[in-house]
Amino acid sequence: MPVDLSDESQYDRARLHQWARGRARSAGVDRRDVLRLFAAAAAAGPLGLAAAGSAGAAANIGADAAPGIVKPLPPELFTIRGTNAETNFAALHGTGHLTPLDRFFVRNHTVTPRLAPADWRLNVWGDALAGGPVEFSYDLLRSLPAVERTLFIECAGNGRSFYTTQQGQPVTGTAWTLGAIGVARWRGVRLSDVLRRAGVTRRAVDVLPRGLDDEVITNGVNLGRVRRPLPVSKALDDVILAYEMNGEPLPADHGGPVRVVVPDWIGISSIKWVGDIEVSAQPLYTPWNTDLYRLFGPDQPPQGSAPLTRQTLKTAFELQSGATVPVHRTRLLTGRSWSGAAPVHRVEVSTDGGTRWQRARLRDTPRRGSWVRWSLPWTPRTTGPTTLLARATDTTGRTQPATAAHNTQGYLFDAVVRHPVTVV
Ligand SMILES: Nc1nc2c(c(=O)[nH]1)N[C@H]1C(S)=C(S)[C@@H](COP(=O)(O)O)O[C@H]1N2
Ligand SMILES: [Mo]
Image 1 (tube, rainbow, N blue to C red):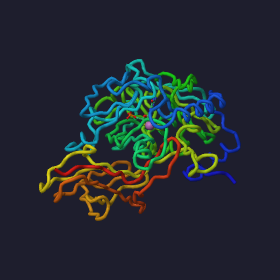
Image 2 (tube, rainbow, N blue to C red):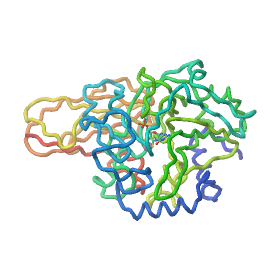
Image 3 (tube, rainbow, N blue to C red):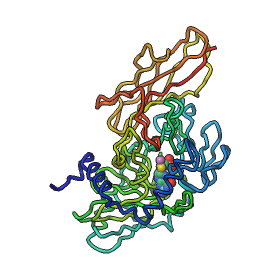
Image 4 (tube, helix red, strand yellow):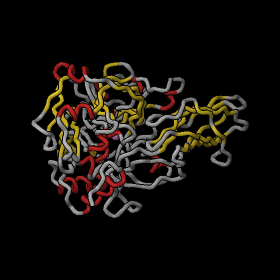
């Protein structure tokens, strides 16, 4: 029976099957190298060591520098994690629906390249095009019909550190708390318009955008340039090639001059500094859809899960972890909740460690692909430590659980996060 790859669950099953049968060609990377790399990552132990999920030459750089990120990273706004910068959620308090560019998280496998729009070209090629390769300049792209959408980009590993700190489970990769997400207004062109102009045919199965940043070398293994295939159904559906972010030309750190933006899907799908796109009549495999960005571990299918696609459900307070708050004074607790599956329509907050829950007021109209801001007034009556919790429910009916399903690389953490504060 032909597989309908426009159905995400069928796509997942088809991919899992191909993987299990050993049909995976890990595009340019020796499979044994990747396995060796994984053994090394596991031996390096939990969080932040030279793990595959935090690939890059500078994974062990100290906490005061993120070499290769261009924009300023003041400590009030960001926590540096290797080559990456995490948004401090407390720094979003009082900001609008969109994450200001000066505090949008940066996740770099290597370093931010500086690319001039005038020199930039996008090469679309592959055996599922009607003819040869087609090149797009920046000006040509800007002359095509423009679209604008407000969408989050969130790393699949966002919240990863809570597997360890809250569930006592080891994971590898960058030890994000909840700040590996941002929401922006993206302007660009539909990827489908570009693919059609390039002559995409019905033979197309996979679409593989690749970044112009340096090749990724992890533990001596060269994984090549950052790239992850999209099923053609998703590529032709709602994916954008963005050249503006919040009304500004796309900043260098976020993929300027042009990046891919894939609504609802894990951040790695949204390839920055896109330089070429392969349109293939066969399924494609790269380290980013085979060994990385799948779920492995005792609680997962024996061969690992299908490649990850949609993001999960999460909530964060716009408050420092461990903050002190004055007793008998009313303050407005604020935060944000989001889901890759559907709009978030209910948020409940507990100020007593989870005994009593109150419904928060939503400050945004719930919309697909973005977060909702919420608030709840709180007047603490007793001094001492307490735990704040907040949990979201999306319109599929799903509510954040008490524990997240463990996986070795710490992806898709969705459990309610315990937020310690002290009342004084
Ligand atoms: N070319 C390229 N694209 C990339 C990456 C990268 O290192 N190189 N990182 C990916 C990951 S893992 C994430 S989470 C998002 C982060 O986007 P941001 O840095 O704009 O926040 O970009 C993705 N696209
Ligand atoms: Mo990511």
